Structures are given as structure tokens and as C-alpha cells.
Image 1: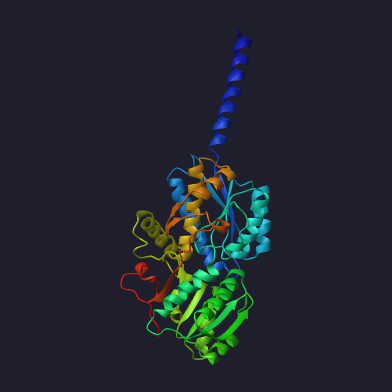
Image 2: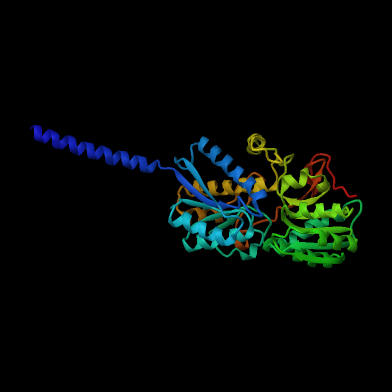
Length: 398
């Protein structure tokens, strides 16, 4: 009898361990893997994406995580290098064995990550892919809602805005980085400008990573354009404006594609700069609790991190929306299976911080939701279309 009791106790103990292990396993954290350009030329903007991701994961876990599992975010530094991003996403999937992926910042690194995700049949929500025609993977989804033809639609929106200004331009200089999405958009702007009757007085390119903008500023000054289309990313626009100031030149109208938001808005040289946006920190974009709650905590975190700008704008909104899309896919599919998540996202619209988005167009892109904003009194303010403008704000020119 004693032997029997010992055996029964042993069996019960093993059973308890097995059940306990199963419970522990079912409650294991859900790991989302990604890279960001925490160093290198894209770091000024990527730091915004890192902060937003940390905020979202905290909020998600405060709501109970995803399908009952706590969420952890494993982010690695791709150093603004697409080749390194490719290697790191391989590591995330094969070595780190993350459960889900979320895309990096920047078109080059996004395409590298997308190629790896496709090889392993992983769904990937990306932040800022600027060339929709390159998105060939059916399980990749953008949070950057610039439509499937931004080389046409985005420049038309920009030129519509300046055409309605007090001094519509007649001539334009188009200067651009060779960074893939920037270059693509700027070439589109050349064609749109030509069709609209704007005279191109200068077209000039520079290699991504360039830091000497003196010769470029001099060429622009000599061309005397009414408007400058600057195909820039991160701090390139700030460096160009600084070079212009050194030769006593102030551009009358200057548009920037993807500037680092804080440095551009806080620099005196950035006053009246134009850019594209999907969200700014004012009505009507702040007319919901999700936005106002995010803005409050973002202000707290950016202030603590001593960031140059504490306002929620296009980059922060796109990053937040990427996490919203991923969460909606998991909850909608009620599964962590990549194919199930992708199928749900393709068939449904998702409410994001900047509006409802869809993924049933070419390359899983939906509507072009880009608008035009301007630096006014040290803040980005939406100015076009007028129904989305900040209260009392209008596009200003010198």
C-alpha cells in the first residue's frame, strides 16, 4: 500500500509539473521582432518610432496583452543599412524565434525586411514604405497611407496647396537625395510640375549620406526659383537650409518630403517649411480618445527623453498606426498564425489614429491620405486641404 501511495504521489507530481509547464507555456510572452535605424543617417527619425513602439507595447499590456499573452518587443539596430536589416530579420526569425514581425523605418530597410518575411511566410506590417509598386509580398501591409500611386497623387496635392497660396509659384527647383523613396517621389514631382505648367529651373541630385550642401545651396540661389521641392530625409533638409543661410538666401516656398520633424520645426531656418502628413496634433485629428491619450503619454516620454520636439506628428502617427494594424489583425483573426492574420487584414478596414485604412488596392495599399503641413510659430500645422487645417491656419508664403 505504501509503495502504491508513493507511485501515485510521483505520478501526481509529474502530472502537476506537466500541467504547470503547459500553463507556463501558454502564458509565455508574445515576442514581436523588428529593427530600427537607431544609429546612422536615419536615426533622428527612427528614435521617434522606437519611443512610439515602447508606448504602444506598454498600453497593449495594460489592456491585457494580445489574446491573453503579455507582449514583448525585441528591437535591433540596423544602423540605417538595408543589408544589415536583412541579416537581423533573419536572426529574429531563426535564432530569436520571435512570434510576429513589425517593419523598420525607411524604404530600403523595409524592402530588406519584407524579403526575409516572404521567405519565411511571416506577416509584416511596415511603417513608411514610400514606393508602393515595390511591395510584391501579399502578407506585407503599410501604415504609410500614401496610396498606390504617390508619385502622381502626392505631388498634385502639394502643388494644389501652393497654387491656392497668396503667391502661386511659376517656377520650381527640384533637388533630391538618391534615397530610393525620396528619389521616386521627386521624379514624380518633375512630371506633375511639367503637366501643370510650372517651369523647372533646376534639377539636382545628391547621394544619400551627403553632408556638404554648400554647392547645392549656391545652385539653388542662382536658379532663383519661386518654389523649391526638396527631396530630403531626416536631417538633410536642415543641412540644406543651414547652407542657404550661410550664403544669405531664404527660399520663398520650400517643400520637404521626409524631414526629421522636431529638428525642422524647432530650427529658425525651418520656418514656413512645407511637408506631407497624415496626422498633426490638433483638431480634427485629436477628436478621439485614442489620439488624446497617446498624445499625453507621448508628451511625457519625449520630455523625459529630452527630444527636440514633443508633438505627435506624421512619423509618430504612422508608427502608432502600424502597431494598431498588427493588433487588429491578431484580434480579428483570433490567432497568432501569420496567414490567418494577413487574410483578415486584407479583407477588413482598420481604424487607426489618423483614420480608417484599407488594404485591398495594389500592393495592399489603399487610399492616399496625405495632406500638406507647414511650420508656423515653431509648430507643424496642417494647412491643406482646408477641411483638415488647424483652427485658423492658412498656408503662408514670404
